Amino acid sequence: MSGKKDKKSKAEAIGSEKEKKASKAAGKPKAGVSVVDIKESEEYKELEDKYLRLAAEFENFKKRSAREFSRLIETASDDLMLELLEVIDDFQRALQLEHSNIKAFQKGTELIYNKLGEILRRRNLKEIKAVGEAFDPMYHEAVMQKEVEDKEDGIIIEELQKGYLVNDRVLRPSRVVVAKRKLPEPDESNNNDVSEN
Image (cartoon, rainbow, N blue to C red):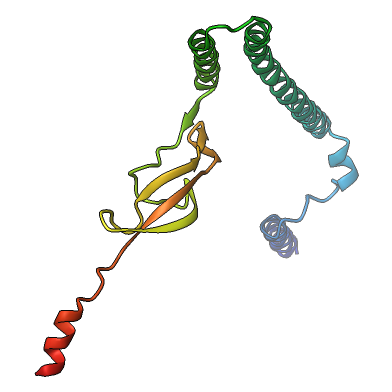
């Protein structure tokens, strides 16, 4: 009889081992371990703590970045305003002087204009090329077309208002007049020859 019991206990042991493997494959937790036990484990608490700290750090980073960006914009415009104030000072000085010599006044105004242009160039402001260039709707705004004989269609023949780029982005398009090729008038003598034939 003991032989039967040994076979039976071996069969039970093999059966229970197969059940354990099957439950592992199915993703079931081991018997005796509950979800509450897993949550209370030290490793879980550490990971949860790290996650919460990282989430808080990320939120702080976003807020700090937004504040710094806003401050950068403010200081950039402050710097530009300070530079432009120098130009205003120059204009005020020029207007306070008595101008008996129009050439000297004109020269002073030209110097102020050049100073302003230099300030804006340092800020990456560039003029858009227009006259003689092909019309490009990305950079030019056509105000009108004008018939001309000596230009091709679409060539800019006049600039009404300068256009500008800042950092290669259009700040204001050039307002332009675009050439429209004038077709030659039909010759009446040729028309008479055709009708006679």
